[in-house]
Length: 375
Image (cartoon, rainbow, N blue to C red; front, side, top):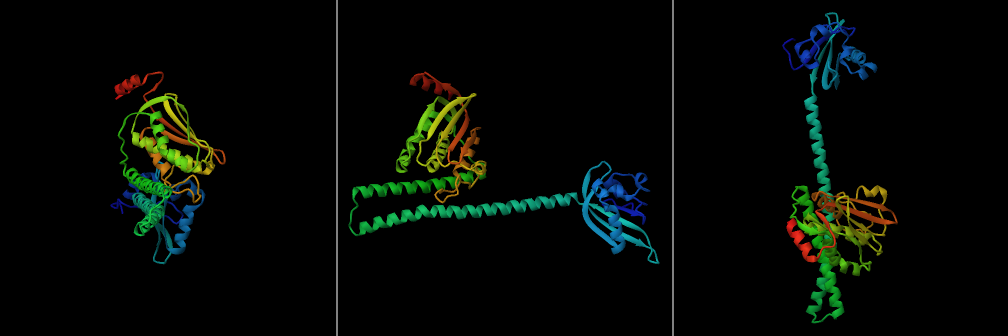
């Protein structure tokens, strides 16, 4: 028995006193034979198990059944714990009288940890597959809607051409605008899906250059002006715009402000939207405030997550990726984004970004020279 090193093997008297102790037991449990022989084997259990009477319960079960097996936590001499596979068997003489027990313990900590890692891996894979399936279902639905509308419009136009009929200028203008909007929506959905793929594989790269935040936001507002007109929303007011420059990816910056402003239009109930660009504690702070439906408290922490929307209403179209991608862009610029909101009172989105300098009272030429020096 002393040559067995991978297992702790020892004998116990009917009263629970340890009568032998092999080398494997010394290695696993850290007690020397001279320290442990003669002691009650209950000392090998955790204090909680001792208080619950587990040592005597094991002996009683073994007496009744002849063998006791389980996987449970055991304690070493230094107080540390390990997962153990234990087998306790009765020893009987020729008359069948019990004269002791033999206990075999195997340390299975590595096996249990490996099984837990495998389980977590399987759970992660299952979750990833579920997310993928949900995403594909959502994407196919969202892509199908504008595609169906676009096909109907094209079919209508083809029908008119075949019949040799012309469209009134007003109808043609409306047709062109609708087509343009549908194509823009399709483009945005595809771009969002591509961005998710890039983020998933850490390929969201930035092409930084010196950018004026005011100029960037002004350009986005100009690009969105047709949307404000079509939705009969009030044009946003650039209430405060301190001239601040930073090293940003201009296209990504436009994308994130476009996402937030589009969100403000969608949930703003057509009410005024206010934009501010300020220098606060050495950082650029952009705030975009609407006066719309607002966001419930239990949603605020989730709206920047993948596939989440500020509203569960069907009118809230899209993949639920806009604000998730927005946060990724902000964080890629070493910035921070958060929102303050109250249902029925609107929302304020804050974007904090590192910047170079606040430029005031400088002519356009001097500003250009300053930016050139920064580059």
